[in-house]
Amino acid sequence: MNKFGMTIAALLAALSLTACEREPDGPAERLGEAVDETAEELRESGENLADNLEDACEEFKDEVDARNEDC
Image (cartoon, rainbow, N blue to C red):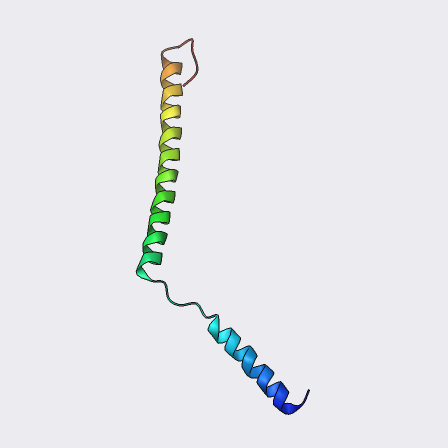
């Protein structure tokens, strides 16, 4: 390949890389990310609440010597 061809190939490669640059997130993208984060936090909180309720149930049943040990 001659110098001209190599120059054209290098320019095309550079242009293709700049065309793939990521644009800053728009308001809808930021809102979607915030919703996703909030949903994840709620899921984790729900799991923690369920664990705490089950622990409290088990402690209560132990204290009253319940026959049914399911919570």
